[in-house]
Length: 187
Image (cartoon, rainbow, N blue to C red; front, side):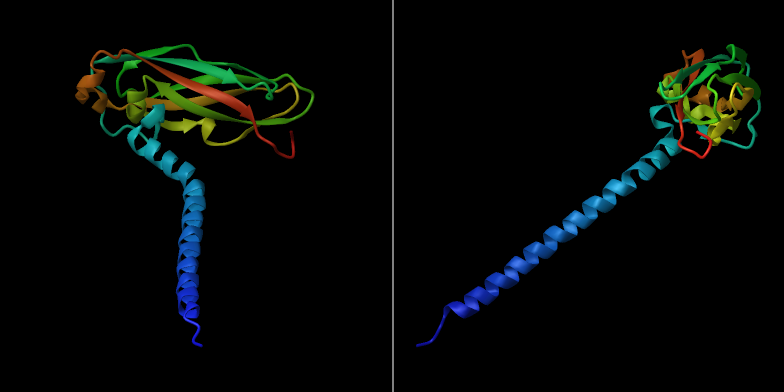
């Protein structure tokens, strides 16, 4: 007697292997996408100023325009960071003017503590026009026990903001920092 079920079982096994391979490939792609999502999102935010992400610049080649803008400053500190932060007072200047302001940070603990700042601007649509030349937020900051430091930010608002009709009524931008502890040898 001839066994006719064997070719059918072989075809079924091949089909199962294809499905298993396809599902495994989907899992690998999903895991890869999960790891790539954060850097890709950050690149997108930086490119278009999404979510109030600011730009990084070496200077303002476009000049200054007559319209004035007030930039306000805000700071928030996570509970795990034993620092006090005093933001700068608001700055009102013509758009395009390069300004430097100073935040004051104080470590009130009895050990060295390393912190980092995340930032954004509001209104969010202004992020693409807010340019930082220098900022303490670009690197981690370590404060010794009881140390107080000045943390400067050099920035300008891009004059191209005037060509965005959605932002014609904007006269105030808020630059906000959230400070958090960073695990390090000193903290």
